[in-house]
Image (cartoon, rainbow, N blue to C red; front, top):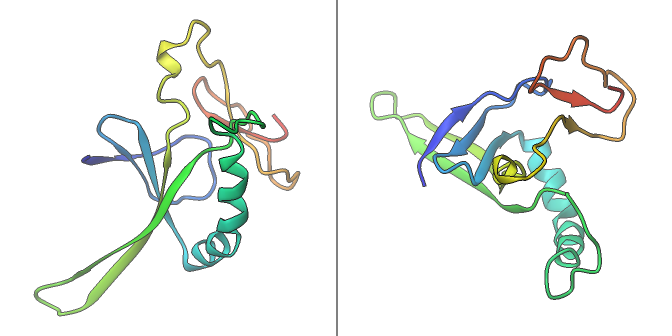
Length: 132
């Protein structure tokens, strides 16, 4: 599916985000450090997520499901320089939110940290942090 640039509000990472045109998936550009961290914990992450899906579904969870980490590369024709970006592809947890009987009132970006985790004067629709 084709993507469009998406700028989520309230977050602090300044990472590049995109959504697929149908809004089912979110792509986030990640750093080499984030890529290495994810790859080092991916086995445990996927084992946990497996327990949240049918037929096992022993743990209900709102943890986002990650579908993969992809490296996209290209070569500039004029300069000959090669460039690449690494993206993590995940589900858009709010994809079906507009269909819910009780719409989502607030969205939080929870990290389990208390350092710099408060958004002053959050507007309607802004992503709020742990201390909000």
